[in-house]
Image 1 (cartoon, rainbow, N blue to C red):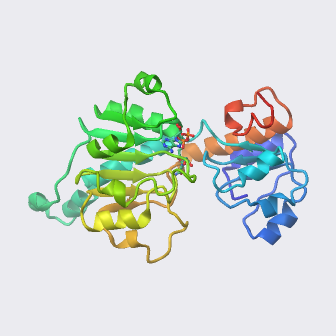
Image 2 (image 1 turned 90 degrees about the vertical axis):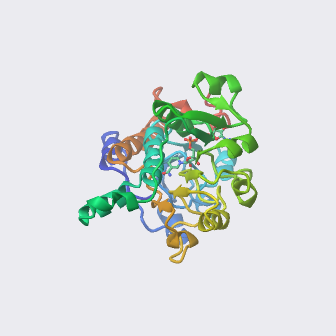
Image 3 (image 1 turned 135 degrees about the vertical axis):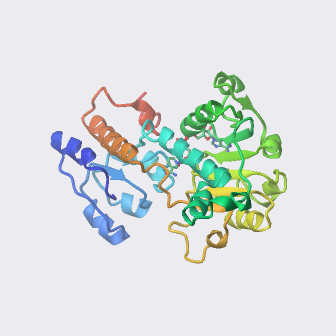
Length: 318
Ligand code: NAD
């Protein structure tokens, strides 16, 4: 569901699977088209229980990505349908997106470029102040695949990396040369924050008015995880009132965001259309991995990466 890099299709065809692509995501259409499929490679469209209950032969849904909040996991678990993710494909790519948002917001190269091309070289002192990442406190919230890839890169810039993730042992955080910290302390000391949590009941509005009342004025915050983890109204207000310095946002509570979204009038925010993982290299890796999950699962191939099957315990695969 949704188009993927051609190398994924090629792989499925090489293994004699019959494949077709769907770009109409209306429930009635999906129920008809998906009735006889064994596997689904799913991009960002919603796959709800109404549609899933009409897929009588379905054995695996493989997400092109790692988040799976667009599929009814409970239904899959109850019906022993596997849920795959492309766990090894996109961490580095998303981490690079975070770094590029940090640098866009602090180095403001776009403003320098504009000024220089306008022949205003001599007016460089009129440009906005710029800043460094060196020796700054970076708080990474959520220390899974992407959080760790980001930590490694930030340490490369000689930043001090703090981690809030109560599900990871302190010793495991320290192994990565990062310092574990609680949420409140982390918010208070951070110069930069990057969010790498799944979206669920516990993480919805994880950063909201209360959290913005604790942070430093120079804070740069980036969310490439899921919309709604940062409360959008609270962030827009904090930026508008210059209570924080800047934000980078790749994900929105409703996607695509509405045309008069409160972020759109702000100049201390940089936005991207949920494409943090969509580099040329990563699209190819994800397409291959999403299809490999399907092939290996359906053919019971021993090369199946169990770490990529989110509900492997429920399926008794381990
Ligand atoms: P992951 O599962 O490897 O890591 C998530 C981490 O969050 C885990 O270490 C977990 O312990 C921690 N966590 C869960 N609940 C928490 C809580 N309440 N408080 C603190 N920590 C908590 O996931 P990942 O691969 O690193 O992906 C992270 C997020 O990025 C996901 O939401 C995913 O959907 C999103 N993502 C977005 C893009 C994009 O294109 N923008 C691409 C890939 C992933």
